Image (cartoon, rainbow, N blue to C red; front, side):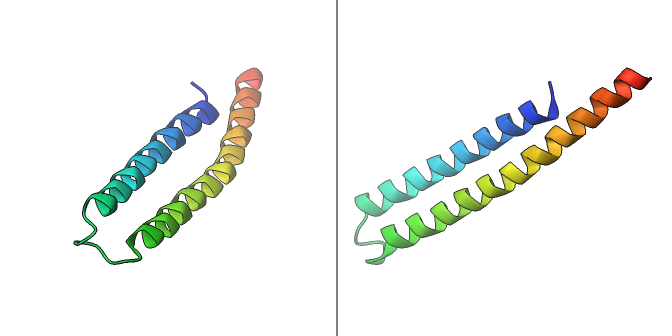
Length: 80
């Protein structure tokens, strides 16, 4: 499996886990309005959105690094 494919798989799993956490916290806030602050939903949305966006941005950079490493590995394999 190439490094690009592994990176995509790992990023998908991590993003899905963060989305699941986001879903859980949103449902918790709706189910327990007396246990959370009035701006709980807004804070959870901003925080989780920022975390997922930052991770996705980092994933794009890492994808280009992985693609470069895959190309170098293919060139070295062809030479050796």
